[in-house]
Image (cartoon, rainbow, N blue to C red; front, top):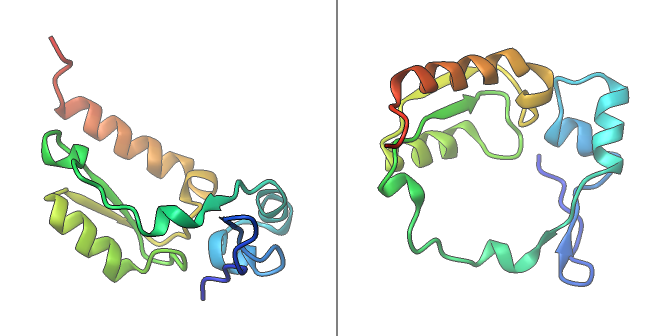
Length: 120
């Protein structure tokens, strides 16, 4: 259900009218419309780039799986978090969980912060 418009000048946008359903399904109309209007384009070239040295290979990582995500399917999120060896937490939210449920994101950050020692 991702509604990406055809590339324009090497950049991609999500269809403004379909943005809420794709990216912000659990937000009210006002915030979802604002996000649609203020989205930052992303380069087509990013789709073909290879990560040569992911930070998750040398640093601990965690993953917040958003089970109602229409941008990155939960199955893909499970694959990515599994490949990284990341402990996961699940939340029934859209891709915009940082806006719709900031407390869930903050809780994960606090949990991680309490388990990771500061660099010396």
